[in-house]
Image (cartoon, rainbow, N blue to C red; front, side, top):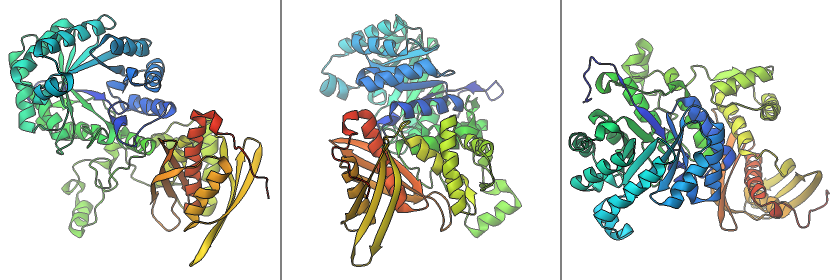
Length: 525
């Protein structure tokens, strides 16, 4: 139950989003700078209170993404992560200092198992370093968060000691992480109550909760912390993150909203942006949303059972505790046709969660018109696939598809004739090899570009319903030991695959210009 009196004003729970930091640590979920800026703007539009933009000391790329987000994103507090050492904290401030509102988030492990095996430090050394880290961070900005890593496995007495000392040193938020997803809701609730009762200066800091989902209890644990008096939840879009992921933002937000009678809390989240933001993060990271995922999954508001359908027709609330419109799902999917103009397309893209520049809109519009000539009905899923194809393409792609021709039959070696444009030149390659047209296309693209890709994962799905639906291909490829992602969309799966390959190759070329030059381009034949 909520710790608040039911007749008092609802508490506002801060939403601390770590999609760009902890979420990006999902295997295969890394994002480039342009993608991070796109997601950061979507998070700002969603209304999150704090964006943890990255871990600046981790790499030059992480530093630059935090710096640019701090420079360009307005609204939320921009936060950077740092260990409790001078170099980390100095680097974090260097990245954050141009943000109108910034926060340095310092952390240090406190549990016995971490002290003994990871840090090899005594409790005295832990307290001393934690206090020094908070003080250094507080010398740069007034908003400082401290996390005793693995707090849910830390002895009560020592946890209280560290929390009291770091608040005295200047921490304004104390985060209690269930770092390994070990705790239960009852344990989390008791721990937060214990801190509120035993730490004398706890009223000088906001209590935050950061849960992992290893045992499937991240959302329940976060809500238990709120019921016990926590004022901030740390979470990610779609629950992405290390191992089994983090608390899902959309779940805790809609739980507190739907069960306001129980939690008596509110957030600043614009809930109609939840589904669009979820889709953007899924497409940007390449991490698919399971169909039965709560709030944002494809089946979240689907009803197939006859009894359920009958009840829904009589009264929606018989089987729906939320309205689809509350989370950003449109009631009507079919909206555009071949006679629709740019303004209608831009408006629909905006409703679906995408803001397109003039050049992006023109590129999407051209592909939309081509699609409209092939399909009678254009669905939201088609538009999303077209927009994501454009977003996944680098701003100045070095390689583009001109034409291709596929010949294949049972018990016959497939043939692919492929023409690509590189700058002002066109090159063609014919491949008669492989065990299918996709394999042959891989070989032809590698031959033309001079970039040999190793395919690690290949996923294809239908963006909408029907036999004429757009096929969306997501590739995970490896080049020189590094992983890259590519996305392609077309009513032709082979074309979608080629576009996905070129998407990945253009990412490689953008990072390493020297590999973009084809050593021996083939003449047009």
